[in-house]
Length: 515
Image 1 (cartoon, one colour):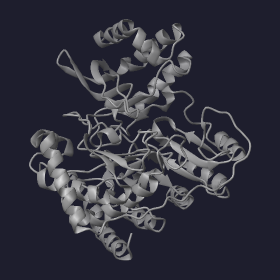
Image 2: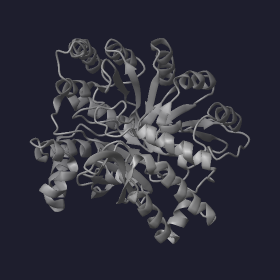
Image 3: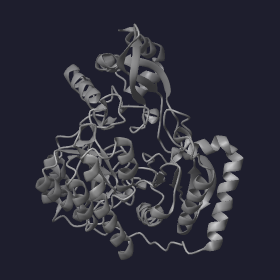
Image 4: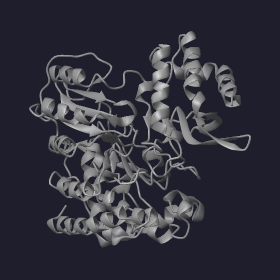
């Protein structure tokens, strides 16, 4: 970011110190405070006096400088709770009102900006976490994610959108960033261009796949398309009803043809104005690898002899001491960096086989099975918006599955959202749960709506269907019984679910009937 932009942000942070102090004194109510704090990437937690700060990581990229900042901050400030998010950011929790603005400013020095991390702003621009190193990718899209981030931050103060705007860029081999159903989803293609879908999104109301508006966007011109999306949203988004103030509702209000025309007209106008061309050449990985390593968590890169290691703390809740341990291990390894992924996973990339072995040993406390890679939002114990404690629900399920001794693959990765906000993208999960209640004898009992059959695979994106509402207390037992049924047939979850749908549905129905 420019020096002028950064200096302005520093001034805004100083002003925000007064705002968070006033809220702490009870002079601002939660709603008024949230309307201000979201633009700075921070929210008050459910507990009085505690706050979350969201650190943007464009494209999920965590350089060693950023890792060092995080490790030192966690130790010095005694941060007790860290969350990897489904938007490739990192959240620090349980902060005091004094810590929040101080950390905002300190983060600037290593290129971390919290501006626009919440509220009605352009959010963290996401890209495929293994971009640049993944076999089969069309090309490395990370530099364009970083350029898009800088552009959106540069205009964030000057625009007033109805709601947030989420941009995702897929490398063509992996679409865990959900480019098929984001507000803007660019997908890299073998010919060096992007296909582009717009006005997609999740949420309880009207989840929508993105509308294909261009099949061959030149990478050098993506900022014109992003500007056009902002302009279209500002012109046609719903400013009166927040429940309908997301881009996906423009598919209804304008119709798909009308939306496509309005958007492409704005693209043409932006190009006519000029000034937004990008000239980017990705920096190749030149590190030489040697040796081989075989481990389910060690992923061969497209660079011969190099590996990426994946580390998934259960529920995306990072042990605070882990950041310091990783920095001490990685700081002398050339060209190594980390990538935060939407599945709440960290990838450590550009490792030789010997380095990968060390990283595997240091991250052995993470997920070991497909099911343990399940995703959960931070949950109602912390989040003001939450209805159910998704973290506790996931942990109870993991404990039950471990105790049952189910083989890996008998259950898939599952997505737990604590409320209808879809922070875990539960509609796209093979199995997904949405927190809510189930009335029994007119008493609301903690429960989750269950979705089946979602997918975020490249070219196969689809939403799952809601099939049942299960009381929270029965979720672990139901998942264990489903996994046992698959294991009894010697099949993985997907094969068993497809071939034994009647048995699967009968098990689910049994638990839905329980009180």
